[in-house]
Image (cartoon, rainbow, N blue to C red; front, top):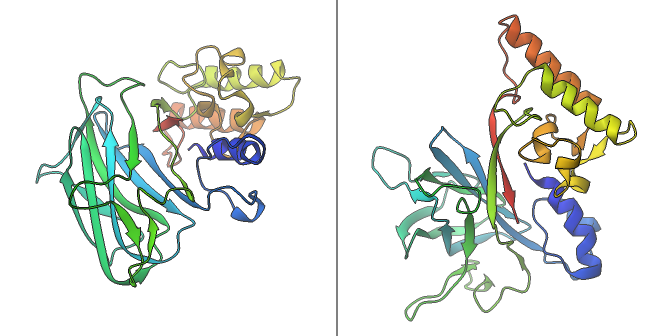
Length: 277
């Protein structure tokens, strides 16, 4: 989804300490960049429901976790018995409880009898859009805080603490300020994908001197190339970080399949969410 933001910020962090975002190999990171990474990836489930995947990266094995996930006012947390409260990810051996912890906030408490590698999607929470939903209220952030009786933490079996409110210097936990829901392949912003989107991609490449466009370079200026697109990533249909003629061809192939009523199983035409940090 937004891996390209990490590419930008990893380079910039070495010079100006810009907070980074998604997963990237750590071998090339500068020495003082945080080595532990947590984030929330938002995924559309239906027109009204969104899944919030809690992602760990770079963590050592651990057996205890307690932290909060705070959602924006555009979401209502799903706790109904008829709908999933969460789904297990990389650490299915953990016991996990989720409870409300203040306005639109979920407290996640987890434990295991032994330290486990939990990197990847730890758990998924679910929220429903409400009448306040817009790009600025559709946020989800991981928070570490303390109460008079307990402190949020991630720790190993011996009790040694990896992360706590007093130990956040090694944690990269960027703040999401908004999100944009978009259709993959919709370069024209009309909530559909057809040959016009293929043309829009080719036009953008032409305006760039005939060479592919690095999505990371136009995160804030993409409307120069695609005036009506909802975000730059809408045109990067193969998710390789570049808007190229390959993307245009894939969009045109999708449109041809739809016109010929040929079954299609790829991601073009599906909804995705671009998180803003």
